Image (cartoon, rainbow, N blue to C red):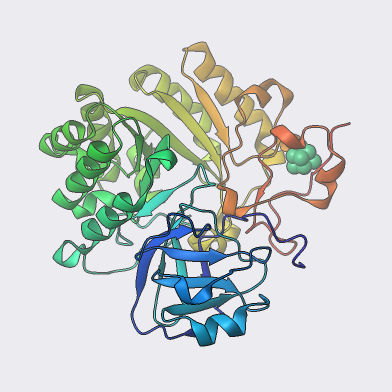
Amino acid sequence: MNSETSTKDDLFLFCQAVETIRLTRPLLGKVVTEEKGLLENDLFFLSMEHKLNDIGQLACQAVICSQTHPQRYLLESDLNCSVILVTENTIFTSGDVITVSVKGRIHRNYRVASGNNAFLVTESCNNLCIMCPQPPKPQKINVDNQCEGRINQVLNLIGKEHIPATLCITGGEPTMLKQGLVNIVEDITRQMPDTLVHLLTNGRSFCYEKNVADISSAAKGNMLAGIPLFAHVSDIHDYIVQSHGAFDQTMAGLLNCYKYGIAVELRVVLHRQTIPHLVELAEFISRNLFFVKHVALMGMENMGFAKMNRKELHIDPWEYKDTLSKAVKLLDLYGIETRIFNLPLCVVNSDAHQHCVQSISDFKNIYHPECSSCSKQAICCGFFSSSTEKFPLTHHIVAFH
Ligand code: SF4
């Protein structure tokens, strides 16, 4: 990509600086793109088109610019602060909140241009799902409340004009932070009372009533819990999450959410182990979990354990489109709102198209070459970038005309 075309934020989460100058400590700060109003703790992003008149007067934590910026060498010699050199196509948006490690690893903790901002609060989990896209890592949880502290700093740096409609909390399993999670939710709700907290949890710890009561009170009624249920019977669910007793705990957790006013998005990942029981699961949900806000039927991401266990799990969505239609029809019949995530329109029967949503996070969303001639591309979710030629999602991509 050349400098003329590299003006759009491609919403990356992480990147590596090409070079850093005078960077002796990790940085955390808000990205600013104009000199006017620049504060000492800000990180100034100098775009290719922008030229500084008085470099010596710039007072900020660091300047970030392309390695090919015409003022690069002046910045290196005349500035007192750090200089972070990045590739030409690395674009930040004013208001982004980022960290830079001393080794030049850049993490965008908050992306202004994205509708998919999420805080990863732990990589530990008490399940070991056979299709987990981000396999858990054994780690100490929230040592010295570090996670809460980091999130609090990021929240403080998000400008009032950039407050999101939704903020996701994800893991691992976020409830493993126990009181730490309650504190994080309280912090978000205090600073952003209108922001919906979307908590992705396996719901097991919600079988304990006090946990649900505490989270519900912290969220002040503004929470959607995304909780997975993979089968209508415990044997299959427990096998998929590789944890005996998980089904019973998750079911108790779901009922407690209902009791304490936490809205539930019930999540079902579609693969070779869940598809044979999908219609029975839809019936089970309709009869027993009628209170859920909606059911999300989700195409599988080809990452982590899903890729490792591909033989046992992968199934071309084209093969299960009739089963999917049946399950959706059943949930419809009982008035349960149903959404189909991560499945391109051309592998879903037309009777279920109205349920398909553009669900794939912006930073990992791609389209197939065939899609460029498709009349439905603007409303189709496309593919995860992990769907490759070697590991395709489907062999049935056909453009609509
Ligand atoms: S051809 Fe591409 S854009 Fe069209 S429905 Fe299929 S995946 Fe979606």
